[in-house]
Image (cartoon, rainbow, N blue to C red):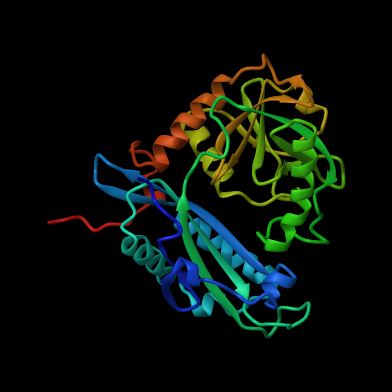
Length: 314
């Protein structure tokens, strides 16, 4: 029997409560206007060492603070230092006695009702809950289509801020992709260059070099893709940050997406045109395997990315 969300306890406002008590009003600003930011990180159960490893918690805290700053949630870092943030999440995992692969979703939201379309000067609250880490996509790869929807530009709704309301844009793209028979959508930015998929960053491989759009493109600054950059360096595979033209999707040897929920997922075809030979490529496969072993605690490299949840028994 795996982890059950419905019977778990989550963090809500200022303490641990039963999951079914973690509710906000229908008049809350977070419901009415999507005024919240969030992050999701992975925890892998290591049965061999009887340990649960939380993956890159410090990087997720940093990105959450950056999203909060962009949205004007100025008091987040004053309310929660990294040490406080880490320990409250570890306490939540311990109380729930988690011994499964799970995700932890943490949100900071405007916790006031009928407050209007603003964030400055309003109360914010923190919430977090745990849910099973079911694979988003099969390791064997997916299909994708280039969306007719443009990724929201930084001067409208910044993609680098993981804002609840920003997901309207990618939901429209995802709907379009599903109706067309694809698993995922690839969004272009306002300049016509590749931005990201609906919930992941994207990389292509050309002549043995991994290429991903740089941070100036309208895309979330992903923690997983940054991890892939370092894993590629460890494997001595060249990695470049640069703009990717739409036409490069047609001539890439491999294309894959990266994210906390997607891991490293190969894209086998785009707009019904095969990527490379139409099968999972060697670089995608190698990175997916190493990434999985690192975040599960199986690999000894990049152990500094892992935070142990349970104390060692003496």
